[in-house]
Length: 298
Image (cartoon, rainbow, N blue to C red; front, side):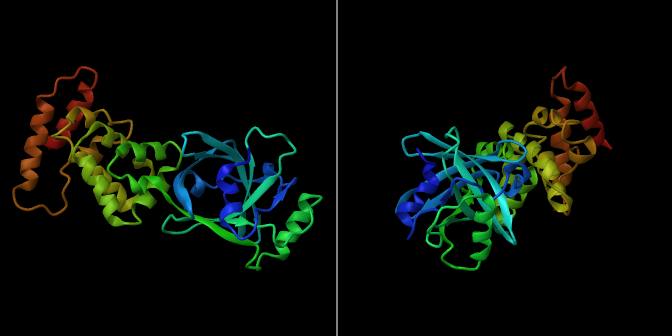
């Protein structure tokens, strides 16, 4: 069985994907592109949308997991090769024999976190290649030819489709660098605001989201995230103080989460947060509780 996601190209494209016994370059020289890592929702013409997970496989390769309609999973390994300013994916079914051919695609992730995948077609290449060098030479020669490739799909991050669920963000955080996830959430400012709002409600899983995103924030995003966690103290004081020292300090989150509050708002919050911490009974986190309480009472 070939890697189903790309083999669909034979059905939806004018030609068939280019295949070769040889990859474009040696995988040992490849880098794993962080921008590719994650879970993607990929519409395909005349087919059901594909759910594709891309995770790091080793220091040079990544693993494609494509979920089929019958709940089966197609697996393939991939690695990138660069020719001039174009980045190619070499892909091969995982577990295939050494004689199984490689397929190729061109990808790009734009500033809006849309992953464009173009299947490299066989139209321009009537003969088989006898080496990686010959393949690279042919691709370089035809880089500007519009018949080299055809767009297969434009994928979007799955977490942006399921912002009402902390699990989608937590799953993505196991694969993608936290900075990537924060950047994705900022494509539409409303998405980031929605996540902060959920965190401030103090739900356990949403506080886990805050901890997962924290290393990927800086400047304004970092302050906004800290304020969201601080806002959760009256609702879930134990959940917040459990994060002290591991993710945040008392200076970060044991504070009023407002910049220019209406009269009385900050005082009301402070009273509620102090009461929540004062009445909280916990042996394991009592030191964290007292430090947070001390900071709020200053």
